[in-house]
Image (cartoon, rainbow, N blue to C red; front, side, top):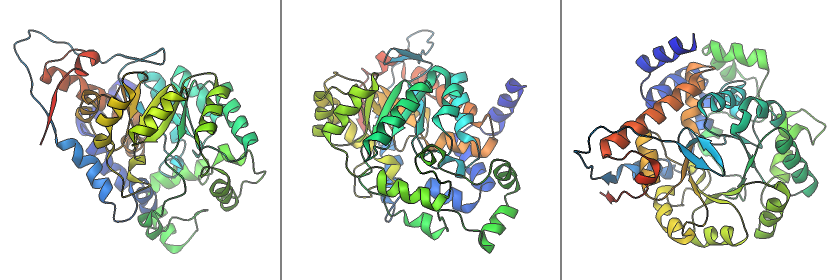
Length: 387
């Protein structure tokens, strides 16, 4: 049954863009705008993807029959490809139970899934679904008791790699989301009612699960009111991260710890110096600071600064297996994507994440053969050109 479904998906939605177009039709505008929005005039959203188009390769031929092997080992775990599912907050707004679906995708496809602190499902329910593929993303709480509790809950739920998010010193403005009518909690207005009526599949599944809630954080509020919980998140998560905090988290976690949101080489050097296990290059999908450089532009200098001491992870602007190949050829060891996997589920339901993974992995392998390389280590030695 699953095989036939995936074959149907492959024939009718062969590109990631196809998933985006169907997802846009299938979910309410407020959900779409939340997922797609950046901040300010959103020029960085455009630059994130456009910068990849400036990276070109010189392929080599006459190498006989080539089979691309994308298998990657990271932090002692073996993955089917250097591709993972990045953390996305308030995911249930785009599709109910999406965290459970993506965790199951990760387990089936043997790629990691990183659950956000501000997801709409809890570590306790998502961790078992992910199996050995679970990572946890920490928005660093100001309250150390809450921090320690979150770490313990994630560890007990089976998450083995921790990602500390550094690049949210405060919430960004995200004007497009506001204009679309996003509010916490969602208000039942004539506009919202019309969006529900005109998107019946989303409405049906949302009614079954209930309006999205920040269930992981509710644990600390003794209150399920979304407005109250959202205020709690704004006041108690983020804004005070420093190097000593990162060092303490590493000590508490007892496993791989990665610092996410790094764009400056000096920050990468400091992360290595305090003993973190990886550096995660990201500009938060262009959702935080419209004046930042693109992640792909930042990557080469961070590779030079890290000097191979720890793995380098990467996200922001990645839309294809070819983009994954570009990032790896510039020095990334692993690439994560957020929006494309959410589009997959929003477009196709429970197994949409599997289809997104199939597209990305197949595209990566195909382009590796087109280039004339057969393994990820070989790809990392390829010289690229720009322009």
